[in-house]
Length: 77
Image (tube, rainbow, N blue to C red):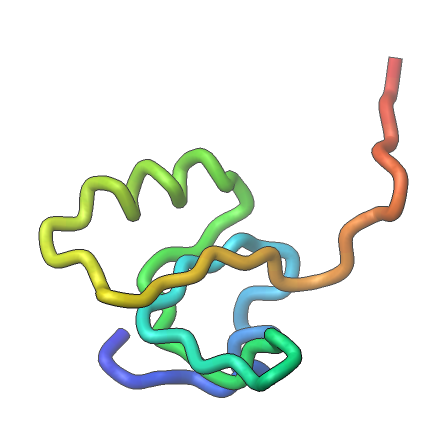
């Protein structure tokens, strides 16, 4: 992705996924305003592997969960 997306657009496209962003722009409270999505998916380990393998690493980057996470873990036995 060559262009930065707004936080709203990132949320709409990648709800329920991890996203790795290049050049994230945050507000004073640390909330995402916009960024360039380089990778996205449900598996954070896979996203970290892809980010680590980048040859041209961005100067600034962030990895965020997009969506609502459960407050307590749910285990199914």
